[in-house]
Length: 158
Image (cartoon, rainbow, N blue to C red; front, top):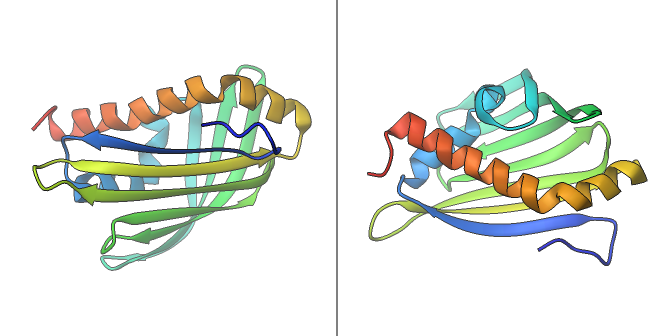
């Protein structure tokens, strides 16, 4: 659901997939691969990494491009593999605010549920207005990109 009452646009979803929570966590945590499959992500580099098997943090810079807009932004990414959670905090770029969270939960009958939250507000009102118009379509396309990537990596439905 897109919030219309405030300048912050947000959405929460849950999606069932035929892959384990660990597989989906690993896929989303592999941020360096995003330019290979994520729409509008044209570049990503890791600026700092303090990650072990137990989790940790990394700082990433992403460049996204959509039509005439091309923006660069930095985020801190907290990885918690034990709890299958990824928390992303915005640092610098075109946003006034950007926060997203991923949580992956194994289902008793196999597969897992991906719980995802995103909230953002651009500094520029033109970008915010444009984002509101295309948000639902873009969100669906990006969500599909992660599931398609899982199909590619893990061989389709299991």
